[in-house]
Length: 70
Image (cartoon, rainbow, N blue to C red; front, top):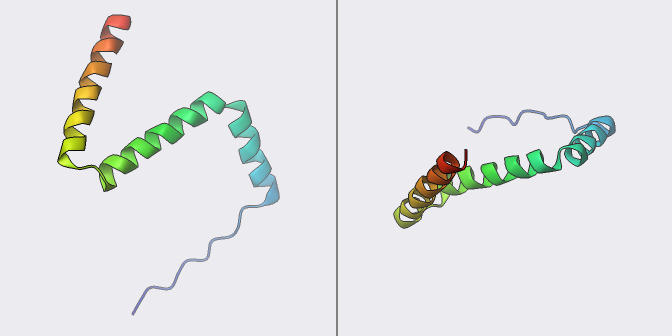
């Protein structure tokens, strides 16, 4: 027997407006968070061994760039 679904109240209009305002005010940080979430989701759910190997190479290159750039 399946579990009953939990009731989730829809967001209020005020909350939606607050979310929109935050996103407009923090566009760059919001973009960063979205990219990070997409990358993690891809790695967890779809990445093949070849994808992971390529990503590890890219990560190593990025780490070196950050080391020398700072």
